Length: 222
Ligand code: C5J
Image (cartoon, rainbow, N blue to C red; front, side):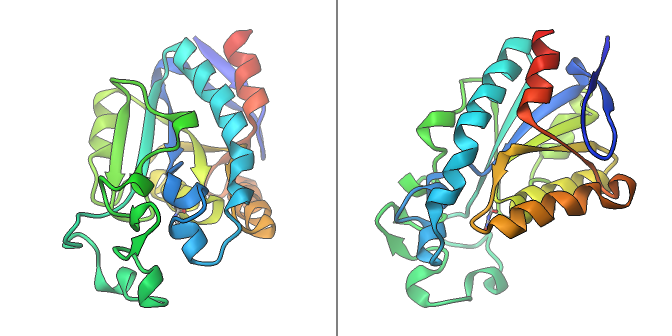
């Protein structure tokens, strides 16, 4: 059965069995002090505003039986899956692979690479380890979506203008209807969050839709 979600630039009709919740990079390295985000000089507390809305949406999605996908940005310990162009920027002490208070920055298996406890995946939920900003690049995400018959992605996480945006753009180009959930996304820069969302809905929804968690939850519980 199709349901209609209020969204910008216009409402979107979707079917829950063909819809996945994608939570991008809610990792300690981006959200907690001492990780990659703070090593770059960002105020990581700005990302915390997405946690409670994400928890509410995640609970509703689990109750509705939606496919839930978590992603983590990070690399192998030997950095053989990291382009030098990505690694070799900024001060050596703050680069990917450098030692930090939560282990080596953005390295798989290190404490900082893990998802924050508030949004920890349940057994059986998909966790995509991605070496890039987008969740489709060099991962099996597209294959999993195809085998599950997914056509619509509800996209949350951090940061709005980097990994959330890149994933929505990648998904849009692959034929998925991508809906950013505004209060479940966050950025270190308020203006980038706002502008990032406006870029999605401008020009008649040039590469997606934007809604909020309340609009989705009210439809799930209706
Ligand atoms: C960044 C991300 N900002 N998850 N990653 O480097 O947005």
